[in-house]
Length: 456
Ligand SMILES: Nc1ncnc2c1ncn2[C@@H]1O[C@H](COP(=O)(O)OP(=O)(O)OP(=O)(O)O)[C@@H](O)[C@H]1O
Ligand SMILES: [Mg+2]
Image (cartoon, rainbow, N blue to C red; front, side, top):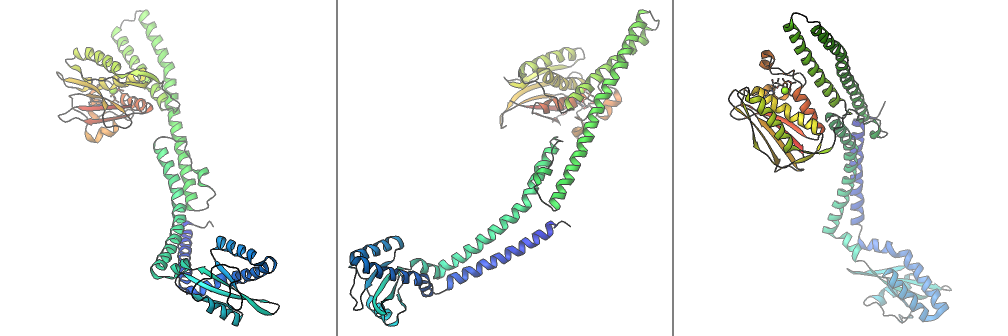
């Protein structure tokens, strides 16, 4: 069985608490040993070896060599030392450490042990050295103990203990947090990518060599993504294949229609009707193929500089012409200079789709307003193209669906107002492929307000 996250977290917490307790214990022990004890432990063997070395140097090189050796010792270890003879006279010619030197030296000569006298800042230690069985010299050294006292004193010691606990706990918690958060971050990034439409995303390889619930979750995610990928791909292929398959019988139908007309068939009205239906079918298939291409995941719109103001003006002029014959108007309410990178035909048809919808739905005698402007607050820069009509709008509950394929609001379907419900889907997908967004809201005072936002 794989050791689960539960067990790992349990063990982790337990180990952390034990570590923190240990750190505290050590810190307390380290900071509560009396300073004298630590100072004597600190330099016992060091002092003995220095004492023997000093006597050996004196023997070989005389007082001058010894003085040089002791100077060097002070420079490297901050221990100020002198070598005294049994009468208390300095052999090396260095300044004798003040105060209790004579006393400590005498004690060391008498006992043969290391003797010490300490005040708040310095410990004076003395070590006698025997030459051929006779205690002839004594090395007296002043060792600074400021730092050790610091460790022992109340407030500093408390701070130090606290720091030890905090650091140990922080290290343990950091490890735990990383252990839990890392796989979650990977999964979150993958989920977001999937939600954005990247169906090829998988987490398997990024989960490392884990053997726990996170790994299982990662594997489940991959399975889900794989299934989604397969389903969506199949759906797209179906849409594309159906559209292609419909094309050939439609082409044959048109040929048959042409033949029937040539042979002077009597019922021209029926033939006209058949022709109209064939045209609608043709338009529908063209739209379906377009959508299948946009949805294929391989569609890469051109990236040419496109003047949006030109597109808006052209679309508005064309639509105004058509609207006029039906007692409606199209008006450009505001415009600006805006060049974006994209596919001019796709962008033209997107704007046209929205404006045509508006002309179709606006009430007789009203004006469809079209405008474009730079979004002042957007970072990075955005351009908004908006279209507002004065029709019945779309029920709020239906607003999220109007960009879905074949979705038409109830009465639009009943009244047979033309379209099949693919226009806005194509608009949405086109703008998405250009890195933009589309939104629709019911404008205050009635009518639909559709906005296309493009980066630029
Ligand atoms: N300006 C509008 N006012 C009211 N309803 C609208 C407006 N624009 C779109 N709709 C609603 O949204 C539905 C979907 O619009 P869409 O453009 O996708 O399809 P369509 O216009 O019906 O058909 P197509 O565009 O494929 O010819 C429409 O059927 C209509 O119900
Ligand atoms: Mg439409």
